[in-house]
Image 1 (cartoon, rainbow, N blue to C red):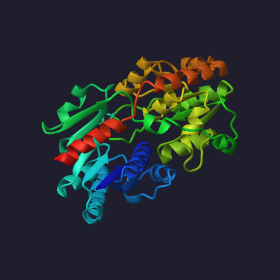
Image 2 (cartoon, helix red, strand yellow; image 1 turned 30 degrees about the vertical axis):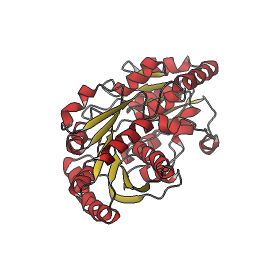
Image 3 (tube, helix red, strand yellow; image 1 turned 135 degrees about the vertical axis):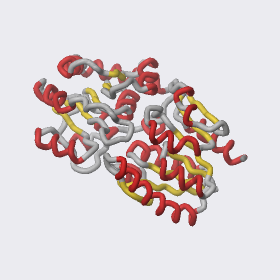
Image 4 (cartoon, rainbow, N blue to C red; image 1 turned 135 degrees about the horizontal axis):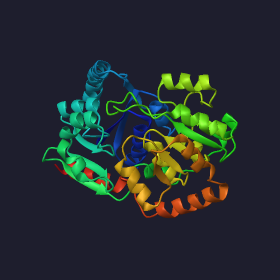
Length: 346
């Protein structure tokens, strides 16, 4: 049986790469596609896969997003019609969802973002199955689903799929001239996303505070505007795509305007702070389980003070505790294959 995996972001790229490997071991033929956006393609290739790149990111305007999706659907339609998969597995993804529906391909969705209204509205009504963490209230996603859609929950988070068993490398530290626990990773907000309607969170002010404290700061920008600003300020900005997991593993702390890198860091025991304007269900779920993950809404000065109180002994204990906690949760793999069996039957 043929399965199609499509990824729009680096996080979705990791998800697709891990699932491709698992599906392949179980005898499925797999097509992996992605769009041209940030490090999505590079992330998939880092797992030894060769994705087909279709389309590009549409930018921050409604018109740009629409036209990019229209063009992407046209190319995907030809590709998928030739490949003839039985099932599409992806995040809420308007272009892939519409192509799958039009060509009679069953659609399974993984989702940890009830707040991503536009993508959910345009994708979830077309799915046969939704795979979601128990940390997300089902009621936050059911408004987007049709009655025929089935929901499969699991006790954990998606990021465990690639963090579990991960072995960090010091190579990225050597490349960037860093010492472990002597730097902070900062990831600015995804302000061009359709769901992001808030004012930016002041990551430059935070970086200035970190540098003033004597720690180094590594900025992982999402957009060229953020990259230019970080370079102008003299922060450490990796060229191209780097091993973000290892970078997070050896950091004193990680601060992000989103949610994914905070979850990855916390699962590895690195103290993580996220500044998204609202509390995210899955992040709060991990925090309640005991992982070092905090929703920060106070001043940057107080945040840096909090980070400076973290010493190496605290980090070592945090990593030991995270390993113990991770053994008690699961990735979405079992729930996904249960959904896949159910969808195939029908």
